[in-house]
Image (cartoon, rainbow, N blue to C red; front, side):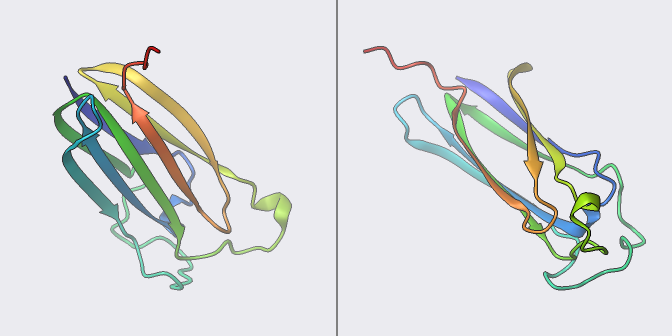
Length: 136
């Protein structure tokens, strides 16, 4: 059994336009839920159409979830735009990168970069991260 640390981050300078919700389910080797955690990083209500980030916004925003001991985690990450891009020029609103890193007892199990659509955001689902392979 391991303790898990999930870190969600991005260098996208307009990440302030998105609310991020992370949900983690810690499971035993047979798939039973041991622990459930969630963390929300909400900047503004959907539809806010902010012209700039809030004054107190931390441009190095990172979402971190830490678990107790278990065998694997299931993870959901919701990236929800509350303010759309200021331009409708598709060339200027390319996807941005969001990194999801999962560590177990300081060993990196996953360090994956996801392309996030600026208009729609995304839902990321990662199942059985850290699970041992099933041998048949």
